[in-house]
Every structure is written in structure tokens, then in C-alpha cells.
Amino acid sequence: MNNKLFVGNLSFRLADADLQAMFEQYGTVVSCSIPTDRDTGRKRGFAFVEMSTQAEAEAAIKGLNGREIEGRQLSVSVSQPKPKGGGGGGGGRGRY
Image (tube, rainbow, N blue to C red; front, side, top):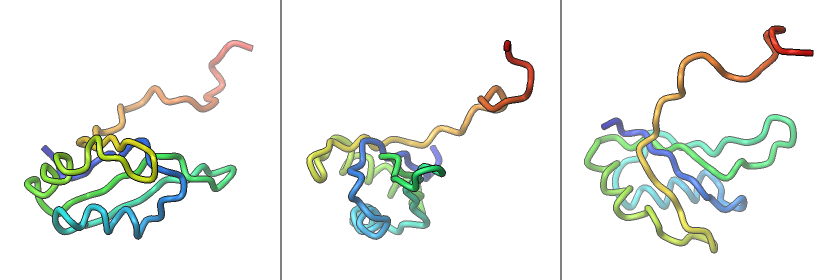
């Protein structure tokens, strides 16, 4: 298991510092980020948090998955790597 976690169903009002404080209850937070939409700058409702050890990551999953924060039930799980290739984006090969 890796130590990077995916956090889904976040409140759009939650800040990086709030997220970090929430996960620090379970160990050392190496990094945390809440992605934003590149066009609007609005938060996208999910985040990535990296804990320093696997045990801390497991503790955070057990402690926070399903917990309600600001009226939303968090979904916390191990982050899965992005699949290689096959994304969207105009390579010029689509039908017109």
C-alpha cells in the first residue's frame, strides 16, 4: 500500500490547512492538495493527502472514511495511479 490517499466528497469551503489539520490527528502529513478547476479556479471537491507511513495512512482511512465534515460524508481511500495513455484531449484523430 502506498501512503497517498484520495479524499472524495469534500466541502468546497474546506481549505488546505483545514484538511491538513484533520489528517494530522492520525500522523505526519507529508503533503496535501485540493485541486481546482483551471478555468474557474473553483475547488473540485476532492483532495490528495500523503501520510509519512503506511500505518498512519491506514489509521487516517479508518478514522475519517465515512465521517461527516461540513454536511458531507468523506470518502477516504488509497490513491490509485492514473492509467497510462488514453486520456481526452484533441490529438486530431477524432471524427469531425
